[in-house]
Length: 319
Image (cartoon, rainbow, N blue to C red; front, top):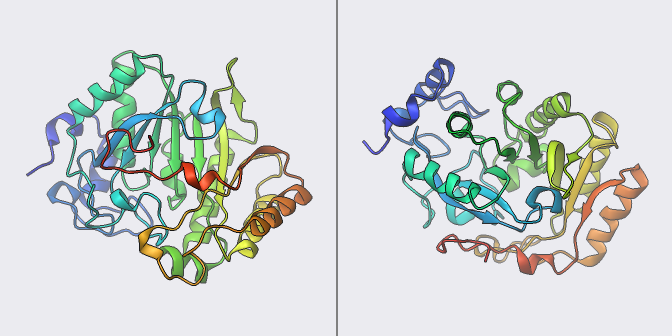
């Protein structure tokens, strides 16, 4: 068996061991024994499931800070976004998925990056590996490291799972993709995404409120920053997302409204997603955001899609 039970399992609490043994961690509730392999929807076992660990400078300025963030990119996912920019590591059978990096080696890589002066660790696509996230945070703390922790999620998380992270995560960085079930089913195979994401983001907001606290160099230390990617042909959906956030969360939250969409080979020929975003579509959504009263956050240049094309065959995927 490829999973190193002894090393990483020592840092799992009893509840997490139960979750992984009969997996109900995420809303899929596949009920597989992940200590016996990755046979659930995410195809991930009880090991580290890491595809890449690297310094990433391409996030929002407050997330990257002046020197970048140590991002841990997990393989697998509990969604199937047909347009996913990380499809090389997220989809079943993807060419760059890692079988398991080994907990001790992964931890050594992370601490090596932190020793270079990087002050934050980001857990990217962690919804299906929350026990592993907790294990890494515990192990870092035991070794005397107290980095800023960033939970970079698709928001297909149970609210109770987010509650279990209270006190361990400093900054929540969730996507808020859709509010229309038929759209979430068509594009991400998650018809229940709107309700699930709404409740998980509400829990993040309960924990952090609307203030994104930063240090003297502008790096986020605590808070909530919600991301939304505007998709070609879906400006109306984006405006609905913003209205939902304004009416049911707060216009005081920080929003990163992204124009960086680029079509991957998986959507070649798709009637909407086979192209890049039109300037008029993005501007329409920006205007809606402003009219609703959102004033904190970031918008992107229309050529941003040229800068966010990872290649996970490389040691540093975004460079």
